[in-house]
Figure 1 (cartoon, rainbow, N blue to C red):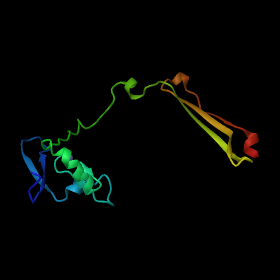
Figure 2 (tube, helix red, strand yellow):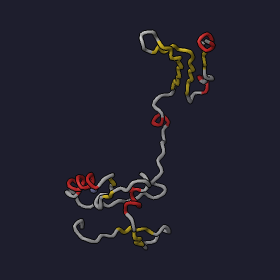
Figure 3 (cartoon, protein in one colour):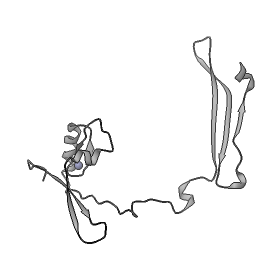
Figure 4 (cartoon, helix red, strand yellow):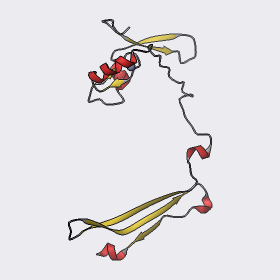
Length: 149
Ligand SMILES: [Zn+2]
């Protein structure tokens, strides 16, 4: 398959209505079809066996040595319903029920020895939780002495 001088790429489409009819579509540019998600600025080089794309022909050449040891692969796309992922259990969505978000701000004060000291000036703490009874507004603190100096 890979040694033939002329290669064309075809995409086999199923009938969206669910009949047994199938239709081939000619892919004029396999690189655009496969690798358009990466960039429009640089060409990508596609392996005809596994349909992975690579930044350079050298990387593709190195890849082919390993990829062509295997039979060509067939890619199957999921149906619209199968392609949606969703968590069914809350405990698998977020590992912890309580999540503390904190942000600290500092002033950078040059020292005599040439280094820069980080002097804390403010912080904000916010507790994120799905449990309504533990929710509270974000707590912010500003050192007014540092803020005005
Ligand atoms: Zn490959």
